[in-house]
Length: 241
Image (cartoon, rainbow, N blue to C red; front, top):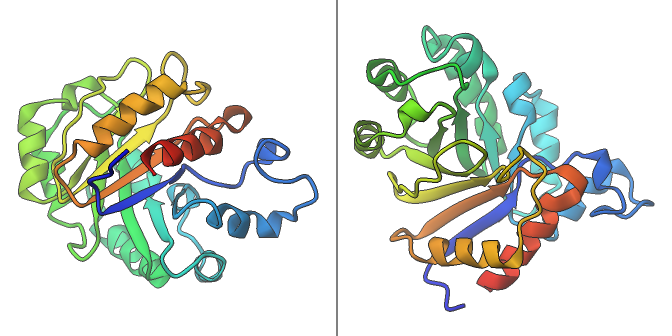
């Protein structure tokens, strides 16, 4: 395929999965070498650990040192901000989060995955967007159908914030680019995290990616079951090469 995108970053949502042994990681490979092995094959990864707690400084340093200089770490925003506080009264913790992940230096995007229980609230979202560090790329993933709305897309465009394009059960697969980069997550089709994307499906996604009128695209497979994520990602890379 004649790729029109200048910078394409494809990877998986996380890399530390024991059920990927023999599916992706060799059985004799030390767990401490998993990230280096992964980074030899992909140029980016979503860091899931940052969703559950603020990463320790030495953790971030380790991820940085085990990956090439042109490898980008995309950090998943803290669940304290998205799920517990639901984007409100978060300025202090958000500043700490920004400050900590900045230690990685090679940041791809900060992904803010909203909970399914949070329905559309334009004012709440805009107040949150105003707090984000403009020196970083940010993307929002919506898990409630009410957010898939032109008013939301227009708001994201005003702040140059990415809209997360989804392949996910029971959520609209709307292709919207609201920033100077595009962002896609593949969660599955009929079931979350368990779908093995076919070559036909991946070729359709490749055509979608190549149609974007942006220079940079990020895409992450979150179908970790049986190592489908790295398998599908490698196939998509091949199609797009």
